[in-house]
Image (cartoon, rainbow, N blue to C red):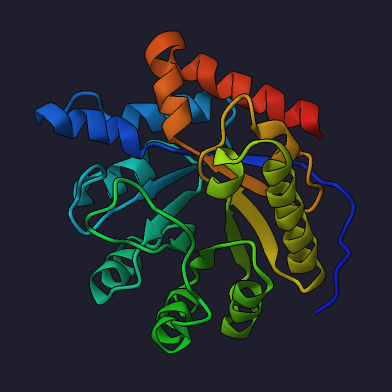
Length: 248
């Protein structure tokens, strides 16, 4: 694998609406409705909706998926664990994309990237069945050459780099994390894989990531939903979009 990449291009914003459903589920009932969030994202120029159907259904529910797909013309990126149950659900709903993520019942949120290198035999048939159904498959991985090589062997068209370590780092450590992500984005693009990124991105830290020319999409959720409590979801998404565009 050799590095370098294409010219800069437009950077898409996918908005993860899971935590609208988290608030809804805290009390039960139907409010606030993640479908309404998806409609707002579409109205203010978001490029996609991301939703993670977890094994324990802690936020997005099964019934939300079809309603989200019907509510807007935006592509749905379904985050899913590599299980037969989630594979069956993905095949049934046929989202635009399915991003395979690691999942542990006890974690609060996704912690780290998928070990694609260590789970090749488990992932290969799932990737194949999703691809055969016309679903664009991505893997949520660390920005490491070993994981990227595994993604290449699995034949996925997209990887999403975990930016959590970057988001939590400061000073020289953050600079090292940023370089690691940039290097792997260039390497992915050179080898025909479209690189995305996400996790822990905020107004304060998004621009250095957004400036990486090979990245095609950022997926951002928790921060935007948190900001929406204070300024509204429309304003939160617009501001993130502005910062991303400024970085390009």
